[in-house]
Amino acid sequence: MAIEQKTILVTGGAGFIGSHLCRRLLADGHRVISLDNYFTGTRDNHVTGVEYREGHTRDILALVPETPDIVFHLGEYSRVDKSLEDPFALVWDLNVAGTFSVIEFCHRKGAKLVYAGSSTKFADEGEGRHQSPYAWTKATNSELVRNFGTWFGLKYAIAYFFNVYGEGEIAVGPYATVIGIFKEEYKRGLPITITSPGTQMRCFTHVSDIVAGLVLVAEKGEGDGYDIGNERAYSILDVAKLFGGEIMMLPERKSTRQNAVIDTTKMRGLGWEAKTSLEDHINSFKQAAKQEVIAEKRVLVFSTTFFPSMGPAEKPLLELMRQMKDIQFDVITTVFETSAKDVLSPLPNVTIYRVGQGKASDKYRLMFEGVAKAKELAKTHHYAFVWSILASYAAFAAALFRRSSSVPLLITLADQPLEHLPFFFKWVVRFVLRNADQISTSTVAQEQSISRIAPRSRLTKSNRHGDAFANQMRFLYNNLLKG
Image (cartoon, rainbow, N blue to C red; front, side, top):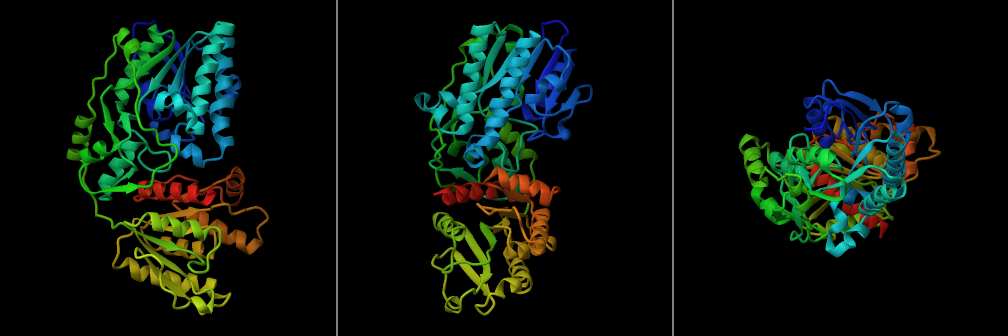
């Protein structure tokens, strides 16, 4: 790096890209400070020699009393599809409230701001910016940075990343990257899951190329328009084929943009070019990876009630099963009503196992007969994961089964209220949440309740097999639930 030794702040310094950037800046001889709230960042990414501060970017003035020369602002909410599922207040808080504070901080301190914009706004002839809360907030932030430069003389440069991949990428959990998901599915012997139609084009860029570009932008860049991306575009289907094996198509999402628009003219003017090939990276990964036991395309579901006795949480579940006809679902449920005792499944890919006699007490039998049936089924099937809708008695049975098996458990809370629970049921919910590998919420109120009821639970995070598969289903279910 040609610039002299400086004090540099990296927001999101414990994240995927941020940790690579911190390592490079430190190697170049700079004093490096990281500010991270560890929403997706992890202490496993810490680099010896970097000064770490934990907290929200909106509190940057209190957390960083120093006057840095350069601020790399990477610490924002950073997933397109997930932003349609998470509460908008969360995206706003991290991307709008937090980023305004960072901009104001740079203005007051006289620091140069290198802002990580989002290339999503360029897609589909400019309509990409309106396709998700993430894309909209990122596009709006880029405009705010530019306006601060015009109005108040803020020193800035805006860079745009294009589908970053590489060592340390998030491969599991709801914030996993595309390449990370494909790698995880490949290692676990699962089908490579693609969101339809599969023809959507993306430019994939290795993290080392991103970091090299950011360093040049900090040194020489001024203003907007620094696209840091490999110009070679791939369809998602072509990328899946590079991994080889079975491919499974999933329903299209309304946030899916179809094209990739990139212009690296300004980056080339700084002397930058992409050096790492996606194909070479995937081939190297496949040579090093050892595939594990091949899992079936089969999911074990616990539900207190199911067809034909269905409520507002079970109806979208059945619709999901109808749409995902290539997946086999084994449903453990109650008889609930005597008339339902011998009712067969309405779908060929769904097998229903009922316990009880059609009485209100059937739900308690799930904890014994339901768990026993699950153990019996697990002897002959290798499930990708166990799934339960709502934190209910069925979920309690699923959690009991989870404690005696290695199959990961997903709990989807739908719109279930968790406030003012009776004492005994609060204990049931706490047990379920603490034993889940992944918990999907749909409201801020649910997240707040979980933090009180079961503070040690793994909210929307997991590091176990089946995650990539589970994330796709969780997202589709929540979309169907919302209608």
